Image (cartoon, rainbow, N blue to C red; front, side):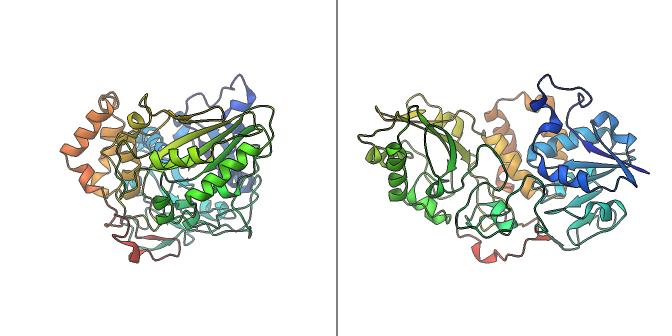
Length: 417
């Protein structure tokens, strides 16, 4: 009977949190929970493990959602890299270009994995599964697998919109036809991708996105939201009768390659809010803009685009003259404080575009305590002086070319820079 472990990035995996809702296995990790549910318990045992238990297993499943999960994977596996009993299987939305951490894994699953886990554990290699031992130089071609069915907690997969920067919408075909985009999981707080679809019915908290500070930028990335659309929606929010304030968290992207980041960068958005303001019946409206620096993703039309490593967007949007950028009796508009610094943006871009010869950067640099203690500007200087910023500024090398989600983006080269 094979022993399967699900790696949790903490040594406290055996201990319960004081609040049940904050314990790791109470969280909504729909993908890995669906995989665990499908494992044949007549042939395998399954349990959550920490890195300390890694070599007590035959197989270890590792969900990868972001570059930080890759860091954690390398940190956990590196002590066992030369003498590793367990076969490491990675999967999840963050598994795209595996060249930076190929030495730390044995199997990679690209895209959806429902209905596959038992075949994989028995040695099978479907078209979306890389067996590193069989293809150590990534010479074969792999597909990004599409959803086969909805798992517990899902109400849909994919997005009808095709924003050019969006990894999710270009790698996940829409499973159930819908007229508008809304959250694809059952959740108390439904995330709307398009502010034009957001319905505000009363006081409370809402989440949406506009993904661009100017109308030009939004339309250029196929986010079909005009300034008039925004103005109309804000007026609509203000007209809602509410006893308490309406809070709307709005995700937006800063630093598209063609944008100039100066003092006037937010003026257009500020003008839209000012024009929408006026006499209302509402108890007040708070617009909280959560800024994400643009990060080009593989398998999207913008996969070749340049990220902006030169602007510290944290400092820009947290400037006292800018952090609350509009205030009236009816509306407060401000920027969130949690914004990725340039060095973190580089680390994410690096994971997407990594070349085999630079895989040492994760273990020897990014996870090195001396590097971690550096200030952000010092990290950027270190990377720039060694040529890494320039090397990874574009995705023209297409290091992920062994993987396809069924789209040809060659016609987009140079279009967005």
